[in-house]
Amino acid sequence: MTPIFKAIGISATGMAAERLRMEVIANNLANAQSTRSANGGAYRRQEVVFEAVLADTLRKASTASGMGGVRVVEIAEDQSELPKVYMPGHPDADKEGYVTMPNVQIPMEMVDLLTAARAYEANVKAAQTFRQMQEQALSILRG
Figure 1: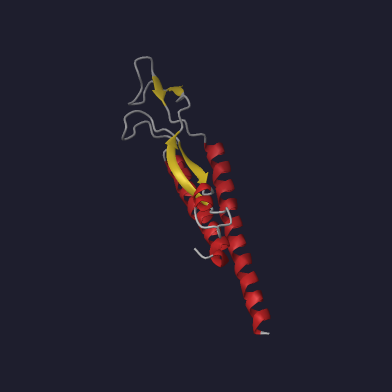
Figure 2: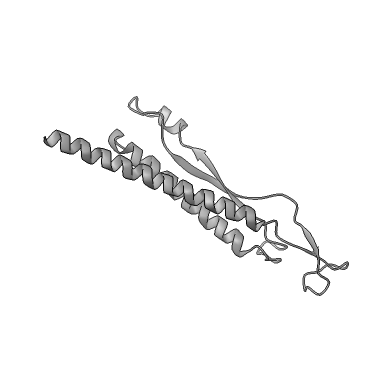
């Protein structure tokens, strides 16, 4: 990517990563009460793990600025303990009447969703600002 478009590329990687994060959060919210999953047992909350794309750009040509955006490394399962709730009439209850529930906490997911949306908006604003700066520079050059 040419250095002149580097800032928009960085914002684009941030937007793509935050969009995926919002999708994962939506999936967590949708499965907040799922006691059965494809893996068997209760649903486990998922988290998106990001990584800065700094090392790749430092290894490339000398024109690299050291900035490269962000990329998704993995979507990891939260290994925190699954809560047990006493519901003796539930079809997934054990012999003592306890059901293993997902480790999804709706208030925490809503906070994560809000921060992901704000980060997405910040990346959009950065790209818009860069575009406006380019337009102003071109208008100055045109004279």
